[in-house]
Image 1 (cartoon, rainbow, N blue to C red):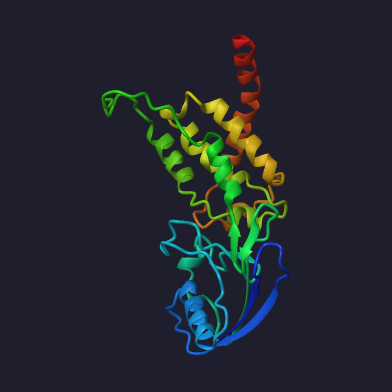
Image 2 (image 1 turned 45 degrees about the vertical axis):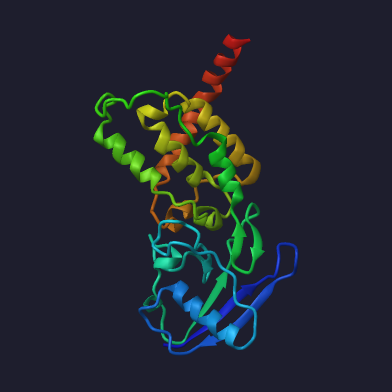
Length: 254
């Protein structure tokens, strides 16, 4: 198959950028989208031109680094799929494909399709940990976890930190990401000691970098792991509770 690509090229964060157009012939429908970009880069290098910079690592839908906007959609036209898992058979022969980096104020362009998603790391650093007492290993069944709670925690933990939810949100909000990272710890017994300090610290850090959530729902639609926006409601509930509980703890320690 043949495709026409319109790719965003930008040499650095503060340098001007623009679209460049390329044609590729003999693209296999069984190629992944990233393999197609590899072919493009091989062609550019053979012509003595600068290859397109883009993020990738595992190429198995696990690491979350492959994010890009494809024809205006985060990760492309197939729902529940990261860019690395998107195959060229999802496009028609002769398709025109526009490829851009994540468009969000918190994600500055490093080069071409590669962006800095360090703001997501800072949210995790604010509270994404638990207290683990040292000593001998606890009995495996000493902390029983109901199956529905374990399942919900695992659903939240499926987040791969790709940033698609932010890129798809018209407000540039990171509530789905933050809610998933909060919930997968807050739902479990091991996460209870920091439950309310965690949610307040992570939400406060999130609000330094990202926009406000108005429940448009684009985040859930763009998420390659199809994480539910129900977790945002759980986070908001805990955040409201944290305002009272944390204030009481501060007053008691004063």
